Length: 218
Length: 233
Image 1 (cartoon, each protein chain N blue to C red):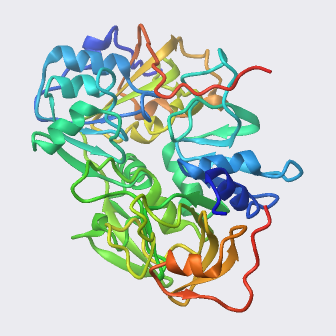
Image 2: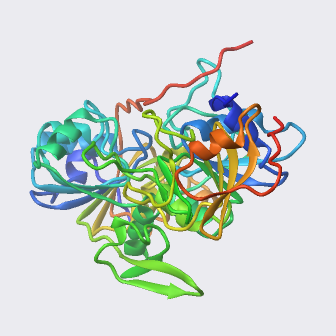
């Protein structure tokens, strides 16, 4: 069965290793924090200026001066720090952040990503997405394998305006875990009960299937 | 001590006029210069170019200036959450330049630091890089981005002293420190203005040299955009 959003977040949480500084985008990536193992030390960075972000505050404890990049009220954990926007992107551009997890509208087999603009629709802006994808070495895209019209989001070439070029190396969708290398999608794992054929059918770009593909362990 | 204090917001905004370029601190509604924005609305000046990460919401922050058609151009990284903004942008009344967030911060910081331009990987290969110089360093491509030029920077800090030294709180810091000293005149409004000697020099985030005018702000609303809480067990 295909995964739901929490299932995708749960699978991505397994990529988060002890000692990692992690930047989580808005949407499915935000859910990843809920599934990170308790026995490892991880710090979450939010690009508006906090490292060591904690859970949402208890009702009544919210502070207007403490929010995340999605403008939600948050808390800061012991050991947290605050900093300005320039320093925040020094952490990102300077590759001090170990892992970036973000959503996408389209990903291409050459690693291009589009996630900020649909021509003809109101453009809200790229926020920090272009800085993140251009800089991070370890980017995981969290998204559904197909869009609402059932069309593949894993393409030969992106059709939407790009956010970054050749930067995505791993994608976790509701159907599969996929790595990008040598201008192709490589199938690594299947969602429980999902067949290689189903994944193939939902993937427009070149999908390389080598040997038996294991099911994800969640 | 070089005293930077002015008695109120009206004095702090002396010299603002039509068609100027302003930098305004804040991320969403967090850490925005509420008093300066109210005064700009009152003065009714128009044709403004505003450099700010976001454009406020319909009835608060920069949304107040948009309602009165005072802004000609916005330079921002993200402008959701504002219906009037969307209407003006789609009708062509408002010019919008979208800039990647880290680039936006660094274009302020470059102006503060005296760098005319810098190379960043952000936006390479996208429409953001169109018409801009690109260059390869160590096998990776970068885009040349220029420092901003602005007439006034309006920033908001938590505490400040008469010398213009500033301390920020939580994530209300955001773009504010990057904009200090990045415009011809930097105006800082603070929740608590104290005499010199009261702030520990070790704790100062922005030295007063980057600030021309400082005043005690009033009636901070500090609106929360996305109140998100968890229930107590």
